[in-house]
Image 1 (cartoon, rainbow over the protein chains, first blue to last red):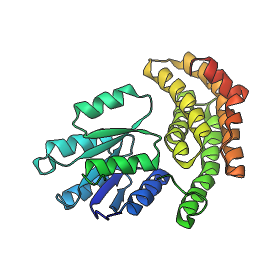
Image 2 (image 1 turned 90 degrees about the horizontal axis):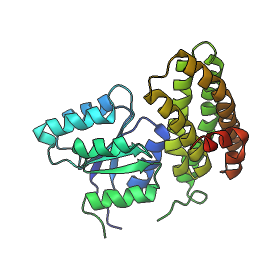
Image 3 (image 1 turned 135 degrees about the horizontal axis):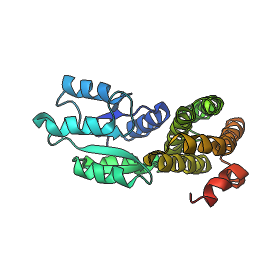
Image 4 (image 1 turned 30 degrees about the vertical axis):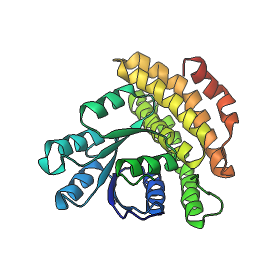
Length: 129
Length: 135
């Protein structure tokens, strides 16, 4: 497998999901940085506006939730083209509507198969076989 | 490519850590249960928080039955809080929650001890009461 080495910012407060995603995407050749809340994710983006090829956002997070982070991303011209993958709660139809309305590139319902996530990330970054 | 839980040492360590976390989730549920009589809204919110996080995580680690149980609790409490439920309704739900939240706590305890998913947790009275209520 070709190692794309793209950097991905993952904002997820559930440490066990963050670890599993980090494991799977690192194995797939990506470099993952984890922010354990939305505010930390925004700080990372401000610090390195061109540092990440993709942002993966959980919805329910302390300090700033995923929707607030997504609004920040889409309101700043520096991140206009940055793909955002939202991790939404299963069965919460309003989450999917929100994701589309606020400009998320894609959403994935939790719980997810880590392999499915890796395939989705590859497609979003143009790394799919 | 599926995850090789048993043969990849790094992955096994991550999973073992998740299984250990089930004891913390059980403890959080029991604490929420003990606060229900005094603060039904707060206790129910705490129960929902544990259930929501469990629902979004467990299946990714190979525990689909825990995810399903978590979803049942989360959905029930989501429906309750999406209405303007008052003190009487919250106190009433607090009484019902003692049954299903205890059953979920028991399920967490068993999963922590065995390290395996067990569909039988969905056949307990606590889970069945949620399923028959429309979950």
